[in-house]
Image 1 (cartoon, rainbow, N blue to C red):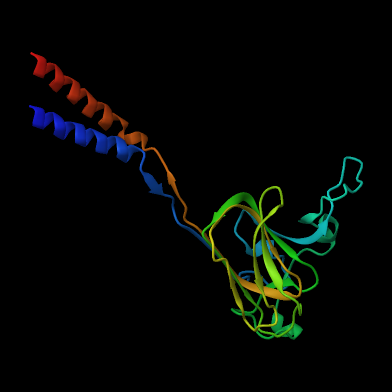
Image 2: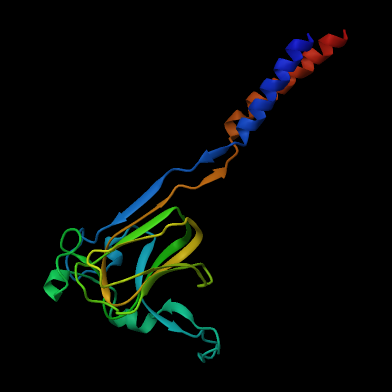
Length: 226
Protein backbone atom coordinates (compact mmCIF):
# COMPACT_ATOMS: atom_id res chain seq x y z
CA UNK A 1 0.00 0.00 0.00
CA UNK A 2 2.85 2.42 0.80
CA UNK A 3 4.34 1.68 -2.63
CA UNK A 4 0.99 2.43 -4.28
CA UNK A 5 0.63 5.69 -2.36
CA UNK A 6 4.12 6.82 -3.45
CA UNK A 7 3.26 6.10 -7.07
CA UNK A 8 0.02 8.05 -6.77
CA UNK A 9 1.81 10.98 -5.11
CA UNK A 10 4.34 11.06 -7.95
CA UNK A 11 1.68 10.90 -10.65
CA UNK A 12 -0.38 13.62 -8.99
CA UNK A 13 2.64 15.91 -8.73
CA UNK A 14 3.36 15.33 -12.41
CA UNK A 15 -0.23 16.21 -13.31
CA UNK A 16 -0.12 19.39 -11.25
CA UNK A 17 3.17 20.38 -12.90
CA UNK A 18 1.71 19.74 -16.35
CA UNK A 19 -1.10 22.15 -15.60
CA UNK A 20 1.31 25.07 -15.28
CA UNK A 21 4.19 24.04 -17.54
CA UNK A 22 5.47 26.65 -20.00
CA UNK A 23 3.54 26.22 -23.23
CA UNK A 24 4.98 27.68 -26.43
CA UNK A 25 2.81 30.38 -27.98
CA UNK A 26 1.96 30.02 -31.65
CA UNK A 27 4.88 31.07 -33.80
CA UNK A 28 4.15 34.36 -35.55
CA UNK A 29 6.33 35.29 -38.53
CA UNK A 30 5.57 38.38 -40.61
CA UNK A 31 7.20 39.25 -43.93
CA UNK A 32 6.59 42.52 -45.78
CA UNK A 33 8.14 42.99 -49.24
CA UNK A 34 5.88 45.84 -50.49
CA UNK A 35 5.15 44.10 -53.80
CA UNK A 36 1.51 43.29 -53.10
CA UNK A 37 0.55 46.91 -53.86
CA UNK A 38 1.18 49.21 -56.80
CA UNK A 39 4.06 51.67 -56.95
CA UNK A 40 3.04 54.89 -55.22
CA UNK A 41 0.67 53.20 -52.75
CA UNK A 42 1.09 53.79 -49.04
CA UNK A 43 3.47 51.50 -47.19
CA UNK A 44 0.74 50.83 -44.62
CA UNK A 45 -1.48 49.32 -47.33
CA UNK A 46 1.22 46.70 -47.95
CA UNK A 47 1.42 45.68 -44.28
CA UNK A 48 -0.77 43.32 -42.24
CA UNK A 49 -3.48 44.77 -40.02
CA UNK A 50 -1.98 46.26 -36.87
CA UNK A 51 1.14 47.69 -38.53
CA UNK A 52 1.37 51.26 -39.87
CA UNK A 53 4.19 53.38 -41.29
CA UNK A 54 4.51 57.10 -40.51
CA UNK A 55 6.83 59.98 -41.23
CA UNK A 56 8.83 60.67 -38.06
CA UNK A 57 10.60 63.60 -36.44
CA UNK A 58 12.62 64.15 -33.27
CA UNK A 59 10.75 66.77 -31.27
CA UNK A 60 9.59 67.79 -27.79
CA UNK A 61 6.24 66.80 -26.35
CA UNK A 62 3.52 69.45 -26.41
CA UNK A 63 1.46 70.63 -23.44
CA UNK A 64 -2.31 71.17 -23.47
CA UNK A 65 -1.81 74.61 -25.03
CA UNK A 66 0.31 73.22 -27.86
CA UNK A 67 3.56 74.62 -26.52
CA UNK A 68 6.73 72.53 -26.43
CA UNK A 69 7.78 70.99 -23.12
CA UNK A 70 11.55 71.48 -22.76
CA UNK A 71 13.83 68.43 -22.53
CA UNK A 72 11.19 65.92 -23.67
CA UNK A 73 12.56 65.26 -27.16
CA UNK A 74 11.84 61.84 -28.63
CA UNK A 75 11.00 60.22 -31.95
CA UNK A 76 7.36 60.87 -32.70
CA UNK A 77 4.90 60.64 -35.59
CA UNK A 78 5.04 63.76 -37.75
CA UNK A 79 1.27 64.13 -37.92
CA UNK A 80 1.22 67.21 -40.14
CA UNK A 81 3.78 65.98 -42.66
CA UNK A 82 2.33 62.50 -42.73
CA UNK A 83 -1.05 63.92 -43.74
CA UNK A 84 0.59 65.71 -46.68
CA UNK A 85 3.19 63.10 -47.59
CA UNK A 86 2.31 59.62 -46.30
CA UNK A 87 5.03 56.99 -46.45
CA UNK A 88 4.84 55.31 -49.85
CA UNK A 89 6.39 52.39 -51.70
CA UNK A 90 8.38 53.25 -54.80
CA UNK A 91 10.57 51.51 -57.37
CA UNK A 92 14.20 52.19 -56.34
CA UNK A 93 15.45 51.46 -59.88
CA UNK A 94 13.38 54.36 -61.24
CA UNK A 95 15.06 56.64 -58.70
CA UNK A 96 18.66 55.63 -59.37
CA UNK A 97 18.95 53.30 -56.38
CA UNK A 98 19.25 50.03 -58.28
CA UNK A 99 16.72 47.21 -58.36
CA UNK A 100 14.73 46.52 -55.22
CA UNK A 101 16.08 43.61 -53.13
CA UNK A 102 12.96 41.67 -54.17
CA UNK A 103 10.29 42.49 -56.74
CA UNK A 104 9.98 46.11 -57.84
CA UNK A 105 8.93 48.07 -54.76
CA UNK A 106 10.54 49.14 -51.49
CA UNK A 107 9.61 51.52 -48.68
CA UNK A 108 10.77 55.06 -49.47
CA UNK A 109 12.53 56.68 -46.49
CA UNK A 110 14.92 58.86 -48.46
CA UNK A 111 13.65 62.25 -47.26
CA UNK A 112 12.53 61.59 -43.68
CA UNK A 113 12.87 58.87 -41.02
CA UNK A 114 9.98 56.41 -40.85
CA UNK A 115 8.30 54.92 -37.80
CA UNK A 116 7.00 51.38 -38.11
CA UNK A 117 4.20 51.38 -35.54
CA UNK A 118 2.57 48.33 -33.92
CA UNK A 119 -0.98 48.70 -32.58
CA UNK A 120 0.04 46.43 -29.69
CA UNK A 121 3.53 46.11 -28.20
CA UNK A 122 5.54 43.18 -29.57
CA UNK A 123 7.98 40.75 -28.00
CA UNK A 124 10.39 40.34 -30.88
CA UNK A 125 12.55 37.26 -31.21
CA UNK A 126 13.92 38.41 -34.57
CA UNK A 127 13.76 41.46 -36.82
CA UNK A 128 15.48 42.13 -40.13
CA UNK A 129 15.28 44.58 -43.02
CA UNK A 130 17.19 44.88 -46.30
CA UNK A 131 18.58 48.13 -47.72
CA UNK A 132 18.44 49.18 -51.38
CA UNK A 133 21.09 48.20 -53.92
CA UNK A 134 22.92 51.51 -54.03
CA UNK A 135 25.86 53.20 -52.34
CA UNK A 136 23.70 56.24 -51.52
CA UNK A 137 22.64 57.15 -48.00
CA UNK A 138 23.90 58.85 -44.88
CA UNK A 139 27.70 58.94 -44.79
CA UNK A 140 27.68 58.63 -40.99
CA UNK A 141 26.39 55.55 -39.18
CA UNK A 142 22.64 55.06 -39.31
CA UNK A 143 20.59 52.95 -36.95
CA UNK A 144 17.37 51.11 -36.33
CA UNK A 145 15.85 52.33 -33.08
CA UNK A 146 13.46 50.12 -31.11
CA UNK A 147 11.02 52.13 -28.99
CA UNK A 148 8.66 51.12 -26.20
CA UNK A 149 5.15 52.50 -25.55
CA UNK A 150 6.62 55.61 -23.88
CA UNK A 151 8.83 56.14 -26.96
CA UNK A 152 11.98 55.45 -24.97
CA UNK A 153 14.75 53.80 -27.01
CA UNK A 154 15.20 50.28 -25.63
CA UNK A 155 17.71 49.08 -28.23
CA UNK A 156 19.40 50.09 -31.46
CA UNK A 157 21.26 48.44 -34.33
CA UNK A 158 23.82 50.58 -36.14
CA UNK A 159 24.52 50.03 -39.84
CA UNK A 160 26.08 51.63 -42.92
CA UNK A 161 23.52 52.72 -45.54
CA UNK A 162 26.15 52.85 -48.30
CA UNK A 163 26.57 49.04 -48.36
CA UNK A 164 24.55 47.61 -51.27
CA UNK A 165 21.70 45.33 -50.21
CA UNK A 166 22.80 45.24 -46.58
CA UNK A 167 20.59 43.05 -44.36
CA UNK A 168 20.25 44.61 -40.90
CA UNK A 169 19.40 42.13 -38.15
CA UNK A 170 18.30 42.38 -34.53
CA UNK A 171 20.65 40.05 -32.64
CA UNK A 172 18.95 40.07 -29.22
CA UNK A 173 15.24 39.39 -28.51
CA UNK A 174 13.34 42.40 -27.20
CA UNK A 175 10.13 42.76 -25.23
CA UNK A 176 7.61 45.60 -25.34
CA UNK A 177 8.51 47.01 -28.77
CA UNK A 178 5.86 49.52 -29.90
CA UNK A 179 7.72 51.23 -32.75
CA UNK A 180 10.82 50.80 -34.90
CA UNK A 181 12.52 53.81 -36.45
CA UNK A 182 14.05 53.45 -39.92
CA UNK A 183 16.68 56.14 -40.59
CA UNK A 184 16.21 58.47 -43.55
CA UNK A 185 18.38 58.32 -46.67
CA UNK A 186 17.48 54.90 -48.07
CA UNK A 187 14.87 52.50 -49.37
CA UNK A 188 13.96 49.54 -47.15
CA UNK A 189 12.65 46.15 -48.27
CA UNK A 190 11.93 42.64 -47.01
CA UNK A 191 10.98 43.56 -43.46
CA UNK A 192 10.66 40.38 -41.42
CA UNK A 193 10.07 39.71 -37.75
CA UNK A 194 8.98 36.87 -35.51
CA UNK A 195 7.45 36.49 -32.08
CA UNK A 196 7.68 33.00 -30.61
CA UNK A 197 7.83 33.69 -26.88
CA UNK A 198 7.19 31.01 -24.27
CA UNK A 199 5.01 31.82 -21.28
CA UNK A 200 3.42 29.83 -18.43
CA UNK A 201 -0.10 28.99 -19.52
CA UNK A 202 -2.52 27.03 -17.26
CA UNK A 203 -4.56 24.34 -19.02
CA UNK A 204 -8.11 24.48 -17.61
CA UNK A 205 -9.15 21.30 -19.43
CA UNK A 206 -6.80 19.28 -17.20
CA UNK A 207 -8.30 20.48 -13.93
CA UNK A 208 -10.83 17.58 -13.66
CA UNK A 209 -7.94 15.12 -14.04
CA UNK A 210 -6.11 16.67 -11.11
CA UNK A 211 -9.23 16.66 -8.96
CA UNK A 212 -9.84 13.00 -9.85
CA UNK A 213 -6.27 12.08 -8.92
CA UNK A 214 -6.52 13.89 -5.59
CA UNK A 215 -9.82 12.16 -4.88
CA UNK A 216 -8.20 8.77 -5.51
CA UNK A 217 -5.49 9.63 -3.00
CA UNK A 218 -8.15 10.45 -0.44
CA UNK A 219 -9.94 7.17 -1.05
CA UNK A 220 -6.78 5.09 -0.70
CA UNK A 221 -5.78 7.03 2.38
CA UNK A 222 -9.08 6.26 4.04
CA UNK A 223 -8.88 2.57 3.10
CA UNK A 224 -5.41 2.36 4.61
CA UNK A 225 -6.77 3.46 7.99
CA UNK A 226 -9.59 0.87 7.92
